[in-house]
Image 1 (cartoon, rainbow, N blue to C red):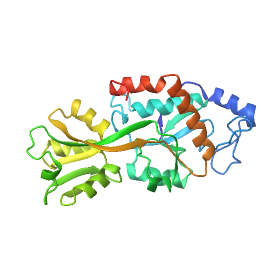
Image 2 (image 1 turned 90 degrees about the vertical axis):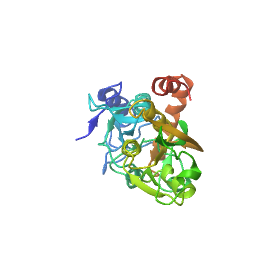
Image 3 (image 1 turned 180 degrees about the vertical axis):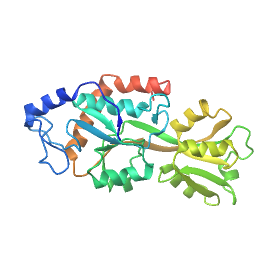
Image 4 (image 1 turned 90 degrees about the horizontal axis):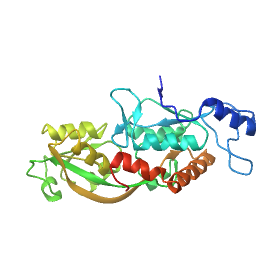
Length: 276
């Protein structure tokens, strides 16, 4: 079952738009691709007619996570892709949460999701597999320890027998491997599990995206701290198949509009407490 996350604008509206252009034609796998942009602009295809299908790990509050009460996706990136879909006259559907390191290969393969939206840092290696939209958020990495920890510096943590938890397949994992070579890297599925291990003393530290680590330490793990803010200068982008450049172009246009009208600034204020 998919997690439903309907955006403003009904399927009827989306199909009405598509009828104007191409008779509410396909875009589903195996169908003749339907033009979904005005004449003269690049067309794009969709896994399901009238909707953007999203792949995410839904494990990085406040960027993307599952609301415990409703079971629905929540967060800055969730609101962002809702708003993008709305601008394109589409609905939005999230696939069930998946492991982070499977998202880019899934988008590269095609056929199951249109986009990957999961605080995916734009890197040269990933750009060989998928296309990225323009960046929508800048970020760094954060290293978390217990608030009462004795070892809180790179020098102290870069020691044999020291366990550093990371999320598998992330830039945080790459940073630890490069900068703390003497420590033992423990790859996990998500930052919550990693910080839980720090809280219980299983790991000396955990490294993940700074906005996530700040949120976790301010809310669920108040006995932990962001001991080091790591200035990696990363940028997040939405991952799109290289076979679907028209969709990348359309999303870029929507992001430009959302920046211009202040929507993205409002979402930053809502989820981070300030414009970033």
